[in-house]
Image (tube, rainbow, N blue to C red; front, side, top):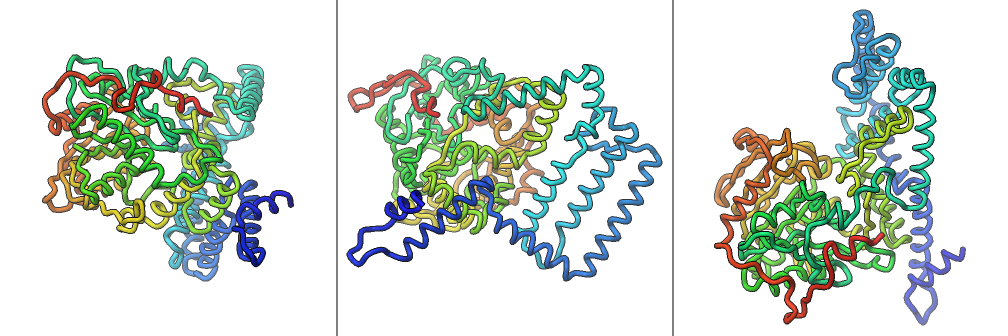
Length: 583
C-alpha cells in the first residue's frame, strides 16, 4: 500500500478539483501488472493464454486435422518400431552424438523423444485459422518444453553421465554441485561467471590504445591512437548497440575489429554508452540520437576537420545509425561519406525469434515492469536471449557443468557476453513498439524530433553485412535495406552467427562470405536470388570492407591530433574510459 500511494502521488498532476480517478486507476493497474511480471520473468501469461486458446480452439473444431495428426502419430509410431527393430539411432542431433546413445535402451529414449519433437512440430503448424504470430509462438513453446524434457538432461536417462559417474565414483556430480553452488553465489552477488578472471577490461579486453575525447551524460567518445604514419582523412565512427558493451568490436588484440581497422590506416572513433540506472528512465530514442550519434558526429568533425565521416553501426546501433542517416538526409546534412551496417535491421517484419515476444499484451506487461523499475534489468534481457538458444545456452551447459562436472573453456566472447547492461524504460519501450511492433521506420511513420524520416533520403553508399546463422537479425531481414533505400549498396553474407560472423578477423579458420554490389538504379533482386548470384569467397570479409571504404576515401594524410583542446575537446582519460566499468 505504501508503494501504491507513493506511485499515485508521483504520477498524478496537481489539480484543484482533487484526484484524477483515471490516473489513480491506471497507476494501480500498472503496479498490479508489474507484480505479475516479477513472478513471470516479464512474460505475459495473457499473451501465452491467447496463443494457447487460438491453437486449441481451432484444433478442437477441426476434426479433419485431428484425424490427420492421429494418422501421423500412427505412422511415426510404426516408423519408430521399425527403426528400433533395426537398432537405429538418432543421427542428426548433436545431443545424441556420444556412441552410448546407440545402445539399448538409450536409443529408444532418444528416438522416442525425436519422434515427439517431429509430431509436435507438425501439430503446432498448418492449422487453418490460427494467426501466423500465434503459430510461431505455439511451435516455439512446444520446442522449449520438449528441449527441457530431453533424455540428455536427466542423470537417469543420459548414458554419458552414467558412464562418467561410474568411472569417477560420483565425483563428477560432486563437482557439478560445487559448480551450481558457485554459480548461484556469483549470480546472487552480481559477480562475473566463474572462469572469467583472466579477462579484464582495459588489459586483455578493450585494450586498443586511445583516449576519451568527449563525454556527456549518455556516452563517451573514444578516439583510438594511430599506428600508421598516414591515415585516410575520412575517420570511421562506430555506433554500437546500447544493449551491450561496445568492446564486442574490441575484444582481444588478435580479433579486435577496432585494432585491425586502425592498423589499416583509419582514424577510428567509437561510442561507449552509459549503463543507465533508474534515474535515466526518461531517456528516449531522440535522446540517443541527439546525445549519442549526432553529438559524436559533431565531436569527430571538430577533431578531424572538414573530411566526411564513414559511419558504422552494429546491431541496434546500426538501426540507430540508419535513423540518424535518414534524418540527416531529410535535413540536408551531408557530413557522412558512407554508411556501414553490421547485422542491423531497418525492417522488422521478419526480425527473427525475438518477435515471438512482441505483441501488444506482452509489451504492455513489459512496459509496466520497466515503469516500476525505471529500467529493464540486465539479467531480464539476458534471460530472453538464453531462451532463444536454450539448447546451447541452458541445457547443454547444465549437462556439461552440473552433471558431467566439466567447466567450459572460457573465452573473450563469453567474458563480453557476461558483461551485461540495463536499458532505460522509455528507450526500450519506444524501440520495441515503434520498430519491432509497428515497423514505423520501414513504413515511413517514424519521427525524429517531431518530424518524419524516410530511408529514401539516405544518399550515401551503404555496406551492409548479414550472417548466415543470425537468430537476432536474420540476414534476409538485414538484406531488406537494399529495397528500402535508393543508393548504391554492397551486401555481404558472412558465415557465423550474430556475434561470431561479425567478429571474423583475417586468418580465422573456416570462414567464408558472399558479396555482391547493387547500383542504386539496378532492379531489385530478392534475397534468395541474391544468394545465387553473389560470389562466394573464402576467409574474412573485413578486407573487402576496407577495400570498399578505400574507394570512398581520399588520399592518406598525417594523422589528426588526439582530441581538439581548442574546440573544447581535450583528452579526458585513457581508453576504454569510465562508462565501460559501470555496473
